[in-house]
Image 1 (cartoon, helix red, strand yellow):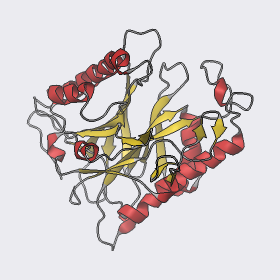
Image 2: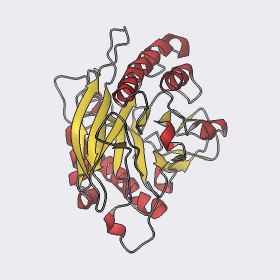
Image 3: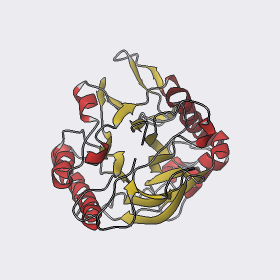
Image 4: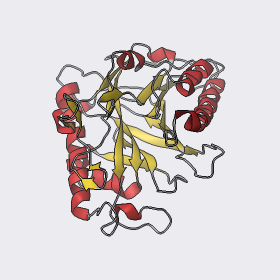
Length: 334
């Protein structure tokens, strides 16, 4: 599926197609993934960041052995997506990764290495060294441009950059196209909703300017684009809604939120704060929460299930993350 532009020679499309590895089989629904990895740190002290908590001598007593348990479980969960969707993701956005090394450990030192994922990462000004990241199938994508957009919140403590990846999509039998993928991790609600909302609004305003620039470059018509991330806000929050009003992006997660589904469980209640926002040309796309048994455990206090997280306070629990991944299923003929 392609969208022509009057004022540009190139065509912008969004990620994911069925890979040639499934030749002879029915084409699977193309999809992309986002996942907050709950402090995916290495165990080494970085003198430039406040990461001492995640070292062997720190409060979390974070060791190489524990890192490998987490790394391997993340990889296993991503590989398991083939059973549900008929293929592996062409690209995955992440939040709460410490550096490029931990992403390369994931893509080069686990069975994911057989799929040929490349890594995009930029250090952000977050004082703990928490960043967003991006992995993609190098066989089918070439990164053309990477921009880290600074979010100025007005507070002393800086937040994560917004990562904007522009890539060329080159698929067998297809015309090379351009891909835009924008990954976010907005400021948390630390200090309370009212106090912290302006910081997320600042991130929303920064993101709006990025999307508006894409629309302006396409003569006023918003090109197909996927925005994703941990917004630390629900789909009906003002920072998210104002972004939609200013850009025309659609929110496929709103119906999940209204049904009480979520990616994070707090005091027995599911909250949906990991989101996709998409351009109108992708209105038929569908968002799902990937609630695989690998990523869940019984919730003895509030009943049902909850994410199988890495830590409860200072105690290592051995899970992958306190967030569940989200998946955006695109039309099969995309």
